[in-house]
Length: 112
Length: 115
Image (tube, rainbow over all chains, first blue to last red; front, side, top):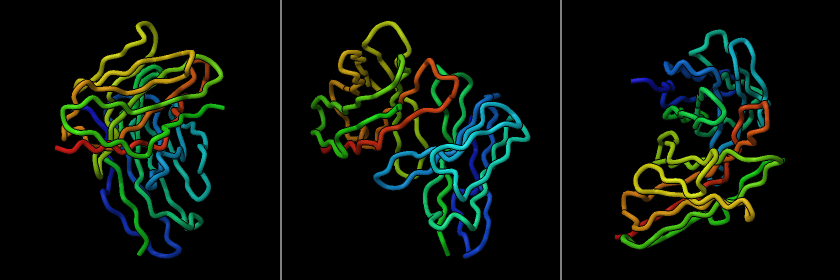
């Protein structure tokens, strides 16, 4: 079955450490997205990519970085510059703008 | 600017009663509108969408939504709620005239259906 796989499901970050969250899709979708979810704040867009080797900052890109070297992969790095990284991170993809986004099951990141 | 408002953080209904989860939006052009549902520690699941055509849209699990252009609303409804409908619901909008592919989400409404 086609879908989006996020790994790991749970991740712990030490002080000053960069961590990378994986997002892989086998839906052959061009566009991919990273969201951060905090209780009571809905989904906030971190980065998105509409095509390979291109990506744009969302509303809360500071302290995060991404790459899009392959169509199926869109990893997110949470850098040490992100001082409050504890959240639930969701990856999504879509084929076209009038179609719904498909979501992975998320990675929950916590501080050690 | 594009935005979505879900005015109720929580909605509580008894099983068997109708439910409504409210959504209003603001876009500069014509909207694409979506509803999603999220269960604990899971990603969002697509419920239904309005792209064009009939203002009443039917979706998964018996849910429907009515697009009202004059009131810029897209309320989610179900005639008879189930306990299993208890979850977090998100409304989202995209301006169909925008070249950017991003969605704007509301803050979510927690639906609780009691037996």
